Image (cartoon, rainbow, N blue to C red; front, side, top):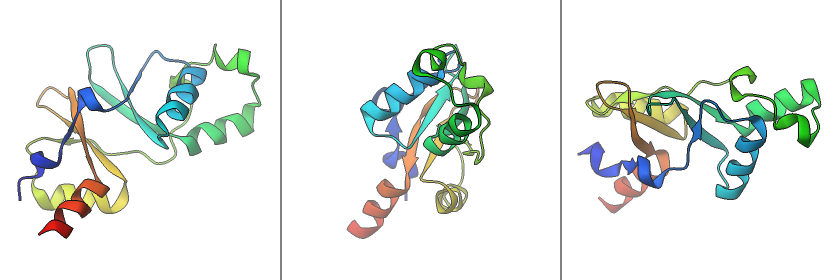
Amino acid sequence: MNLLSLLIPKSSVASLDGDDTLRAAVAKMAHHRYSTIPVLGSEGHYLYSISTGDILFYLQAHDPTLHEMEEVPLSVVPIHRPFTALPVTAEEDVVVEALLNQTFVPMVDERGIFVGIITRKSLTEHLLKK
C-alpha cells in the first residue's frame, strides 16, 4: 500500500503558527471543528500538535479572560499527549502503529518541514475499499 496516497497535503490542513496565541488557537480549532491541530514554526517546521484537552487543562489552571487569552502564547500551554511526526519515507508499519495511538500522523520531509497528515480515518477508509 502506498501510504503517501493517503496524505492530506499541508494546503488542505489548518494549522497554527508557533507564535499564535491561545485565543487564536481556540478560534481556529472552533472554526475548523478540529480537536487537535498541528503547530508549525516560521519556516514550516512541524513543532507539535495541540489539543482541546491541552487548552482546557491550561484554562482550568489559569482561568484567563478572553482578553487575556489574546496575550498568552501557545508555547506556554503544556502538551499532555504529544503527536509523533514521521518522515514521508517512514515504513508502512511504523505509520500504522502511530495511527493506533493518535488520530493523525503529521508527516515531514527530510528537513522536518510539515507536508501534511495521514489520518486514521483515511487509512480505515482505504482498507475498507480493499
